[in-house]
Image 1: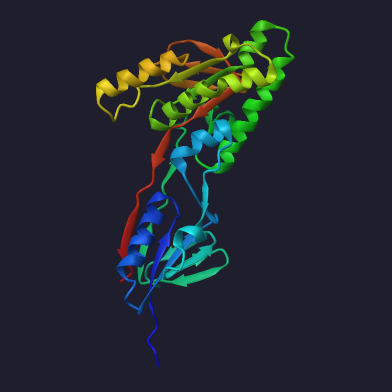
Image 2: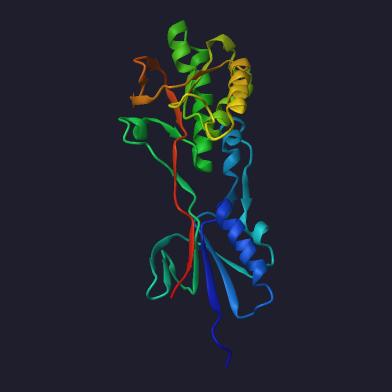
Amino acid sequence: MDSPKKNIVVIGAGYGGITAVLRVARLFRDQSDFQVHLVDRNPFHLLKTQLHEAAVLKTKIAIPIERLIGRRNIIFHLDEVGSIDPDGKIVFLQNGFLPLDFLIVALGSHTDFYGIPGLQEHSFTLETLADALQIHDHIARLCAQASSEPDVEQRRNLLRFVIGGGGLSGVEFAAEFAENAVHCTRNYHVSLDDVEIILVQGGDRIMPNLEESISASVSKKLLGKRVTVLTNTKIVSQTAGTVALSSGLVLETRTLVWTGVSTLRTCSGRAD
C-alpha cells in the first residue's frame, strides 16, 4: 500500500505565491511522494503592478491560474482560508480542508488608512481588479457630468483628481492618468484645462526608495504631464467632497485614489 503523499500548501496566488508554487513544483517534480497545492479565492493571477493601466484604460491584467500552472504537479483550490491549525497540520478552507506538511503563506499587501478620518469611507484603493474597474467607471462618470456642468468652478471640482502616496503605485497611476486624460476630455467635450491631477506625498520627495536623482527626474516628467506634486504634505481628513491637507489647504474633489499599503509578511515553514 502506497504511503500518503506529503502536502506542500501555498496560500495566495499573487507574485510571491505564484513564484513559490512554480519553484516548489519544479524542485519536487521528480519526487512522487510530494503533492503541491495552491489556494486562492480568485481563479486568476492579477498583475498588480499594472493596476493603474486597468484603472485608466480598462486593460486586461488578469491571467487564468490554469494557464500559469499548466500540467505541473499543482492542484489549485478556488477557495478562501478560514484558519490554520499548525498542531493538527490542517488548513481549513471555507469548503473543506487540506492536510499539510509544509506551508507557504504569501498574502501580499493590504491597504492601510493610518486612522485618517474619512479616508477609508470615501477614498478609492488600487489593490484589486474590482478596484481598478471601479476607478475607471468613476472617472468616466465624472467626465460625463462635467460635460453638462455650466459652472466653471463646479466643473473643475469634478475633474480634480487627487492621488495619495508618492510611491511607485501612486506615481504610475498619476502618470498613466495624465497621459490619457485627453481621452476623457475628447470623448466628453470638456477642456483639458479643467482637469487637475494632484499627487500628495508625505515625505520630501516621491519614490523615496530610489536614488534622489531618479526621484527628481520623475518629478520633472510628472510636471511636464501637468501633474502637480505636493511633497512634505499629508492628507489629514476626507469627506465625500473634500480632501484636507496638512498645509491647511482644502481641496474640493470627488476623487482621491489612496495608494498607501502595509505589507503582510510572507512566511514559510514546516508543520512539525
